[in-house]
Length: 435
Image (cartoon, rainbow, N blue to C red; front, side, top):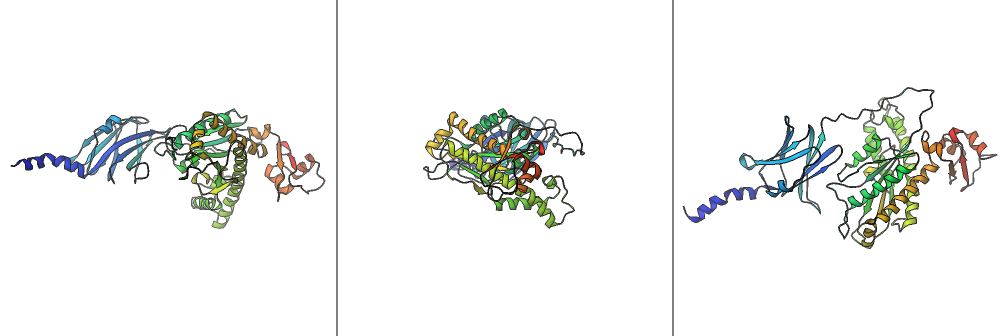
């Protein structure tokens, strides 16, 4: 056999691997309720996975694949994952094994290349031993006065984990900046009498968009604030923006809830929609959603007004869009684009702890102003804060009384009104405890 033939035999294993798919990297993101493992691969990947017990493992078989020797060295375990192992299989396939600290329910999907990453295989591991949160029990009506509760403010830092969001010229990542802002805002909320913060994301991990809404609802949030940093190809564009959901976005969400009427019952005070016809169910949900939309726009306007005090705004009015995180039908929601991270001067400010504190304080001021004028019944804020209402065009005395849960007679008496005529811009005092 000649030298060329021997060389061909020596190269056959290498050529087989080169012809197949290559695992080039692996990263892990640990969240409180799940762990995400991402494998960077050289091309489209075919895979199957299954779990084993005693000890707990997740096995991932990749067709016609090999692994870069450096992947295991660079891999850092975390969350429920203790270690990563690999080995070849017959036919040129590859087996990856994740050693686990407990039983999991895995979910996998593949992602196509984007501007930041190539092909990826993503595996989400959910704790199989964790029991689903029990639904709150329905309580019977009682003559005992209900205990006053804190207002719950859900604060959502956008992006996270594998999703860095926008990136500034100096390499500032949106996911890092907005998490810092969210934490600062949470501290301000925690210091506010009668308010309690809930951080949707409190670390460098990704939370699905609808999961963010669900977490807010699980915590019975009174308000949902999503924090982001905008970007545009023209680096001169600058300024903050505040968004509420658009009517079209709200309508599409209502259609989803109508399709699952049992899940929608708590949106209309626990009334089951199973036995309601389509029109009645839609009317009931629309009434609940309309109040949420009105509140979303009002609190967004209050926050935007405060953002104008600390710097330039990109849009001088509340913007409307169909962002998924704003679509909760029963939680007033807003999204704050704090600045353009693509603008070098704004990127510099976003990196500044002092400016971050100013932004967090501006959002807090807007939230405080809204709830001072609109304290939800049964909350500590409602008891502590004197309530006032600035009369707007289209307001009626009966509508104001209904909105604040007071009688029309008490509203007239507290404001020394002889009739129901209202002057736009005048301020009404709202009676405490329903008047």
